[in-house]
Image (cartoon, rainbow over all chains, first blue to last red; front, side, top):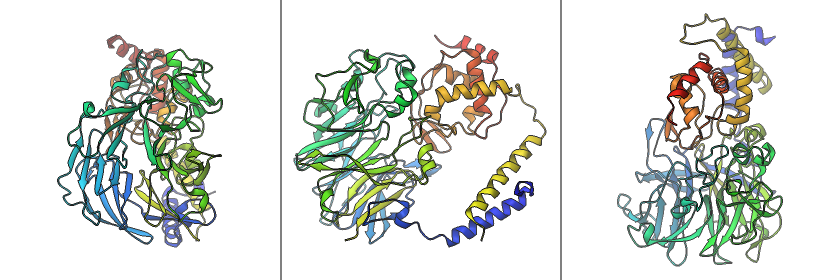
Length: 423
Length: 148
């Protein structure tokens, strides 16, 4: 048996085999992704250091990419990378910005970027190039970032309103966060400064909380959101609460802990309340449930006061990107429907993890219509990698290219994928 | 060319050989007890019930959120600090090998001294870790100094 061979010999053989293997392996078809018939994918860039989060393409074929870590593993780097895409490859043109963060958005001659506490904007020239990379305007400052859900998602509507997600610095507003059996704080104070979408003016410098309005509340954490042009309305993907079983083991099984609660899509109007931390949504019962921290038991439902989701997905898959497809390259069924990138779960353990794919949610007349389907799968690598959560890539930001292809960012390896349809 | 299957076999053999080597190495002098089989069994059960959600089955933690337990000084170093983290919870941004982790760890002071000793002994001797056992007496001592 080979187990009896001296270790050094085996090491040598294995190294040789690996080298040889690498030399002859062609690039994986469709960059390792599984796609519907007629679609193709490739990695336009495969190793941007520091975790690529949101991406903002320009009509001229550039992409601004936000880098989450400006310092890690003994290296420092800039927080925004400008790439130019030429066919199936992208090259780095330049990088700038000394702050880490997640949000990146292009609108009407300005590039918007967020750190975990602030929002900046850069004026662009007629070719969408940043005029002065060293001197952004600080638009919003002093936002709360406290251990959990720190990244700030940003979006600007057609009326120069800037929407900022401020995630809850808590899992479920317990007296002791994530503590077994700890109950919810009455009148959850987290909601005063977080767990909602705030609206500011996109062109007014140095705004604080008091200059903005809490546009919608009761949203634990939103990373992926997009403006739906058919409805002229903001749609958001909420990351549902964690650890129902860990915190209340007598009420929820390990299996329920993995499936519940839903990751929800909401269509928001000003003043809406989605109910966190008082409720969660059970996608199997199609009901809003009273949270165990506030007297619930996995059975008590809540009917009043809080809005219903327009669509619900299995628990903990972490929707980090939402994109309404307004292009014409993809077949008719995709137009005005929603792509959702599910970054992938971690707290379904010990059950298998789930996600690590991009979903398509069909829409009709501005509302979800029919079942969602997996559009692009295989980011994790093997099925075992997905089940264990040890994914090679995790899909994060979504954006549409000028030719109607879509870009998907990956914040593990720093890959950007381009997915196109072959007519 | 050597097939993928053979490479896997070779690698498996390689790991196996290393394990054999590790086992025949003379036991280094340590400042604590060697882990008992009972502690390891009980510790594994507790890990699977309580710790696995955040730190994962392989002890590797979760990117940006929950720190890994593999060969870190938090796990292999000062036992008093490690016991204290389990008893009191942990609420700081920490950096391990250049990566940062930010999730809150809840206090687990509801666990008995022996349970904490077992699970920490298991963690200190799993996922590639090798370190002395944690005893119930050590946990008791740290608990006595814990602010209430």
